[in-house]
Length: 112
Image (cartoon, rainbow, N blue to C red; front, top):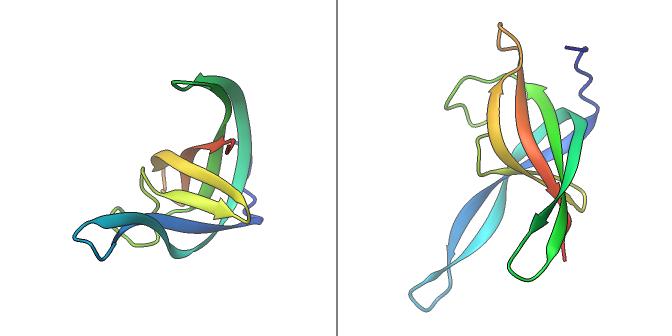
């Protein structure tokens, strides 16, 4: 593995349910914190939805390690935001045997 160089400021966001005032709820994204990461591109592909195809790029994002359950540790289902770019997290694993770095397997989805 090449050395990790965390030069990109990423906002870690999680899904929150917000009451809509009519007995239901709306889904919103809430910032959990800011992490510095090393974003490495992978391969791209086209994903077919019901009515159209859209591009999707796989990414590996390296961030500092954190123990399981720590609020600073990303989990699948959350996402990173970098300005107008959004990277949904698909999976998280330790990138090295000491656990000094985590690798987040993400995608960058092209919005409509």
